[in-house]
Length: 394
Image (cartoon, rainbow, N blue to C red; front, top):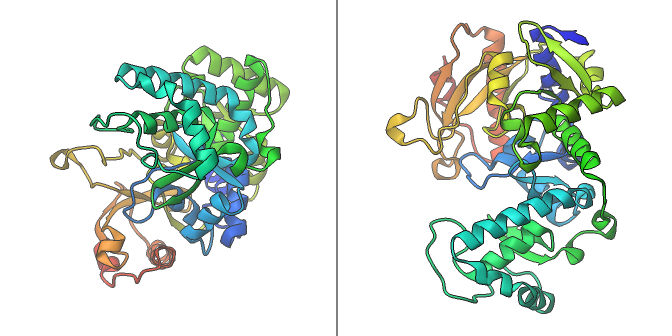
């Protein structure tokens, strides 16, 4: 079993995610390369300083702009919206392979909709498909059938619930978006034929593929239950652990141990190959709250010594830091976190509050790197940089 120091494990993760910029990924081709490597990034509609998927890519790709992700999704069809860990964006070439997982999501959606009294949605499925086949892409509210009810979350009409179910089942696909408003079309009219090819594995083969893909999303994962293993397939610890062992026996994953930890870790071979060129560096990056690197917050705390809680859903009076706080990476350490002002409202990239981690004594090199990261982040937002930001962090 490969033994890693804590520093090596952190450096490997930083290098694998190109958070050191060593791969020189640039523009839309760089975003494509990141998605080729990671396979999946999480989508979240909240937009304080950009949505989560854009924040993930801006940290890894020089010159990234949100319209590049839109092009990869809705022009090039290189990516597709769908459920993976949560609501995600993943490589469209794998759409067919996700069929067993979509079946689990669809079954769960059926139970959920029937449980809240929207069972009539399932009498509308073929009619909804016929309407979209004739009219073209539609939003959840474009086909207003059935009585509208206020459920607090989710589609209010049975017709919208039917469309959501068809999306989870893979019969509808997101054709495009206006902001966060999805327009659905028949999947066969959205995705290229090669992406539609179904894969019919036995249960073991699918679990192995899905487990390998989940490790690839992060690069290095421990076998413990945690946020990175969210999803129907990984509900049972034994299923996950046996799949990891099978993949290690085949050489698809490399079993590791990290100094000071008793857990078994598993790395994709590509991450270990990149480890040779990994180092501390003097780069700084601002990390998304739902970044792949942050998927397992307990593992992040174990390796980086950084305890993080996303406080979006925490009442204001109970928040320790702020509504939408971003971690700050410097080299292979997470050295700080900050609370940004909503960018579009502020008209600039402004930092409301900044907190250094305990034991961090910012050097001139660290401050310079963070200053460069602020300039880079402002360019990604397409907004000016607030002149007072550096005063806040000093």
